[in-house]
View 1: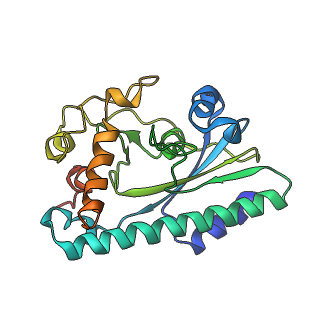
View 2: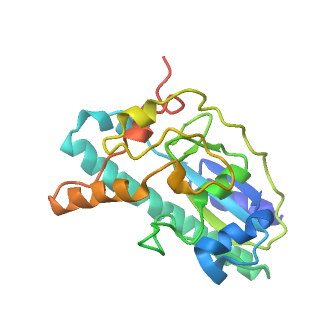
View 3: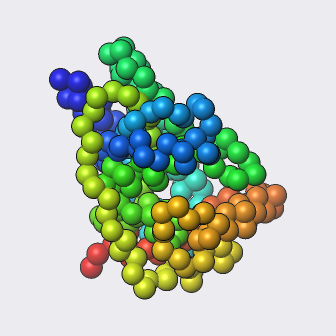
Length: 233
């Protein structure tokens, strides 16, 4: 009944991905970046909404209209995720358990450029996909074209899925198309620092420069080019 009630909420918000991850063995890494706020939660609910391909497929056009629509879609999807995470967290709290919704897009550290908790970790451990060379969560069906959110909880939810092995192989499409050359072309390795794979500050600088030039701060090339997200013939 408990999980059935959560599923009804998910259906109402048209959530495309839902899973529960056991994050207990990653406690030290989680606390390292999120502090005591995120400590002591054994599980994480992972939820995702797919970006419309009708927009992502045009990101390479460098069209200002496309960028405006993508930017708007990005914000709307984040708001949907934040809303459903808030509602589910309230439901879990009323059932007597702890729940901490982690915002879809807010940063807590401007120097390291990170959120309070990694949505990618939750999504990966819930069996949704793997972390690719673009440092995004890659799903088999939609590639990286998914926005994620997480809820940390001690509610007795059934853990779903298993870790999916790396499937990027020798593909370097995201590395080659990156306008800032921020991606180093390395496959994800547990315990390895993000900077070994991705120069996040160089990427962030690119977005800030667009804002300073009064341009729409949109790139999305690593979403656009990934073979797992491209339209199938």
